[in-house]
Image (cartoon, rainbow, N blue to C red; front, side):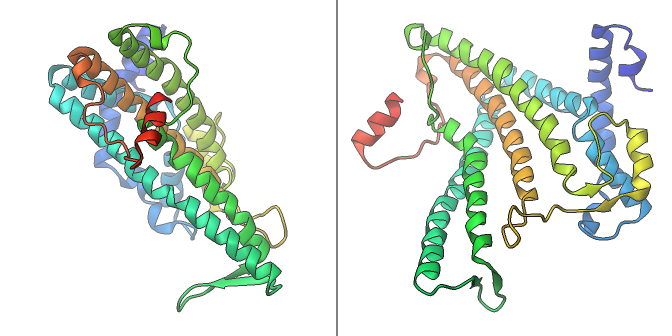
Length: 314
């Protein structure tokens, strides 16, 4: 029984009990990786009993109270260090925003790939009237034209999910401004800090809790449920096997729709990280004043002064 259970007679005891437990849980998971990661070598293959139980632990703890408090404890430790060492906190901001930029700039190329693939599909269908398209050098991949057509939705999903944080860093999201532009510089930073913690973080957590089990219900059977206890999942582990979703919307259509569920989870994690980065940036800009606005911000250069002015206004 953890402190969260032992002190769970009231909300305050439950909170601080789980927060203290988080440090033990973090180091236990760090030094006992086999208890929750031993299933990795058996992805989409047969598993031993220990690997099945490890996978069920991974699924359970991935959306558990224990995992939330581990992440929360890490956030508190990093924040506490950053409050006394601004250079450390700026380093965290650069790292988190740099990660979002790298992922976003890479995923953005899916837009070009989507356009080129659509052109090829139309050309092959209308000119050569083929029913299948083969792609590859040495090892070829052959699928029905409808498979390649439906795959375009996956490229679109990549752009939406993997570029969301990148677009936020670049200031590219559309905002409805009612009071923001009329208030002082430091008041703006306060609103940004509150918004990141009160709006972005809860929305990301709720989406994660939904998306996590939504993902695993399309990867394994028996289906795990958010209401299952750990003991219940370990009991189900005896019959656990991989059952990766490969059903398309059409007989010969795209059949890897489980990847959309993976993108949902990745999207949520990146939004949560960006919320933390935005909170840290807003705090540092509030503390250091107007001279630090946009400090260490890696923004894209469009090469067109008019276009950059329009982007800055929006």
